[in-house]
Image (cartoon, rainbow, N blue to C red; front, side):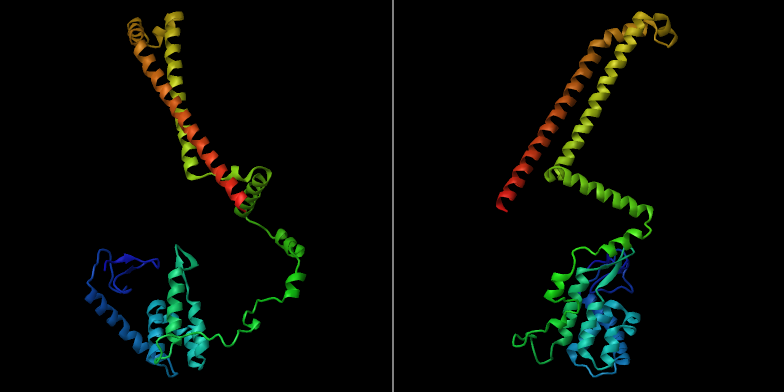
Length: 305
């Protein structure tokens, strides 16, 4: 009932209405049905204009649904229309499956929703008007020749596992810098996984978070240690080199104030360091427990296999 931004990069509302849909638009069920009827009327006129072969109601409805989804321009150049006008209704039905891909983020991909929609439209197109369900027959078995790429058993046995000439041709192709880098990373990852325990190459999300916690705790503990080192260096310079301290702005009064506050600074920095070190130990313990649990699961899986 509310407008949404479809993957085809346009606003849609109701039953797929796009011409007047916009951000923030909402419709009632009656409005959505009225918009659908308004959208279908010109499609029915287009169907009567372009289809020369006689069609029944189910074929008509399936074709209207197809045109509603793919658009007028795509319909006029579609194989469905050409096969239909040639009198090849089975070829037209098979051509429904050509329209299952769409551009998402600039890339042409097959979408699950389009595959299911084309299957429903094709089923409706093939369904007789006097039948409620098309039931496939089991009396006749399809021939192997239906699968054009199907190889015989002799061919499967005789085909080599690796075509050396094809690999050589691919090796001689010029690769871009990105392709070379991707192949190098893949080869390195494969080498690492084969050279050690494969279970050690698996890192779960929880283990990744535990590793991040260890890193953060180590950095903060290091900062605390660096702060204590700086304070100690300042006090040592004030004792051993008072002239240099005075030139740097560390007068006797400031040094005395620092000496008076030293227990508080040391206690605070020491407590912070102890906390972060304890945090690191806890994270390491969690990481160890996760690894041990994963090792048990992998062991159980191997035993089951």
